Length: 270
Ligand SMILES: Nc1ncnc2c1ncn2[C@@H]1O[C@H](COP(=O)(O)OP(=O)(O)OP(=O)(O)O)[C@@H](O)[C@H]1O
Ligand SMILES: Cc1ncsc1CCO
Ligand SMILES: [Mg+2]
Image (cartoon, rainbow, N blue to C red; front, side, top):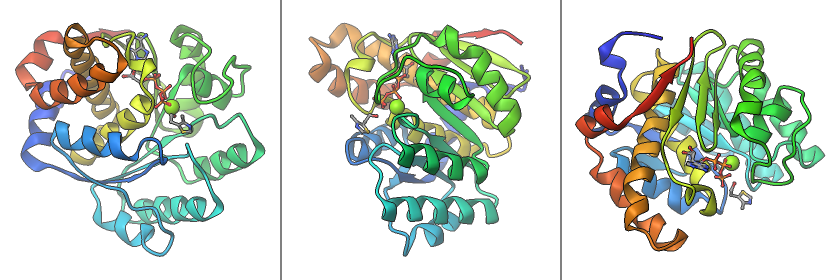
């Protein structure tokens, strides 16, 4: 892994706070509000812009684009494709979150089309990443049915075939660019009990890659480490999923680069 200190999670978080990058999020109806609040708490500037009439125009202006297929319709798919094409043309990074892409033909076809538009980063749960690499996953819908360890090989092969950074999230996250890989521990078992945590993390990955477009691997690690740290800090104050949500946003807002530096539990594998 890189030893470039300027790309450490702490430094990237400090830079994110200084520059407040504009992030275009095309995400699902369930996630929109929580994802936007997540970006604001972290210090970025979210814009939920999905209409095909404007999504491409906006992608050229934003620092990065994130595309999440959680609640699809034909019109939204047109908006996603226009935005991804425009991001590519403007050389802006973009992140794909293939929510339950294996569940229906519409999701499968849309995901195949979006993969052809070469996302910079792909973030999903273990079942989504296993299925994306062509394997048999235990996932049924938007929640994972597989542990992250089972998806690590799939993530590496997907990273190589797609020439993308791939992040698999769960109890211990895994990130690879096909050559380098790390595991990130932390967070809380309450996190999968709140809908759209993963979708919001995808939005935050977009914020970090907006400020480090040439370092998508390090940007992804910084986003995941920030979530792990905020989740660990929020959990002791929570009585259950409802109060955890509130404390999580507060913990992300309060997270300092110094705390992230000391608390990040990143294991370098290669
Ligand atoms: N058991 C767990 N312990 C600690 N952290 C977890 C656990 N499960 C998930 N997380 C964390 O929750 C966040 C979301 O990951 P998850 O894999 O649940 O996303 P997802 O399934 O795509 O979620 P959604 O589709 O509901 O948005 C990540 O930061 C991940 O590290
Ligand atoms: C519950 C749900 N359904 C479609 S998207 C979504 C948010 C979590 O992925
Ligand atoms: Mg998800």
